[in-house]
Length: 111
Length: 286
Image (cartoon, rainbow over all chains, first blue to last red; front, top):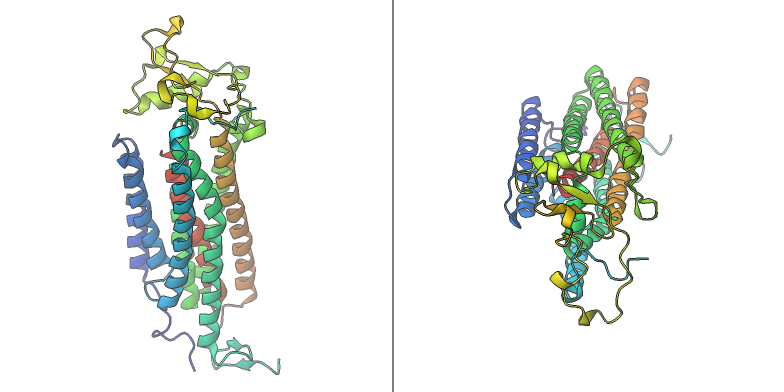
């Protein structure tokens, strides 16, 4: 029996690894360039979009998710789902207190 | 050893697995669950970041001027290169190219040390200027003949969207604000409050835009050190894991085509890279 036959295990070609590497480098360059342009509130979302594209490249190709059993992706995305719940509910809560906030000032945090 | 079965290519299958493939897939699933817990481990700090940043964006805008974007970008590049070599190491192990495997592991370790080296340069700079976490935050900038302005002025000027004339920029460090009025609802927001973003009445600075340190700027550095520190510990752990792989390779463990360990360590390493991609954006490139 051969454990690591090609139907089960994907061996990435050097070419693919290098293409992904180049894409990640370009992504980094774009992120830095985009941060130098003032897009107002869009800045953070553009940055996050590029970072997520880079993360997808790493996940799909370097981490082999593209060729893996889908259940592994499901587990990983599940973690992100709970992370978004965590952030989302915390942000909803903190938004309730926004009218009380004074810019440059953190009530209750001073000495 | 009686419980183990050796397959034709020398792989060892534990007795509770049907076959080598099931054993490999189980290891992989376990690793992915571990990576999921890692995401949630960092998640708490990302929540802290999101909440503080949405409440007090000025603290983050102020704080990020003290981080060197170039060093951050350099570290991003280093980590991406190490991800390439880690992925290549997996390929080499799969194809039983032991020499290539060792080379790629060594390159990955080299990148990891490079990352920690750059990180230590950055931490050293923060340490020297007292730009530390909450209780230790004590900017003592005059000691070395430079002012807060010297450190951030240049970077501010470089950024097109912060139009500050460098020579006229005045940076002042404000003492801690008084404790909050318990009945906060009576304090009008923004302009009337102890804003901390501008000092319009200061005669010495008329005409010049003022970059004032907002209250509780230490919050930024607390979050910065916790996030990058936790990430740095993961990098150190990765270095340990890769050294272990190197020893395994030297011992001949991968000669049989058994590459599960390399695959698992590489997965962990890619996750560390993935988290840094976000940290670089959120801390350096606000």
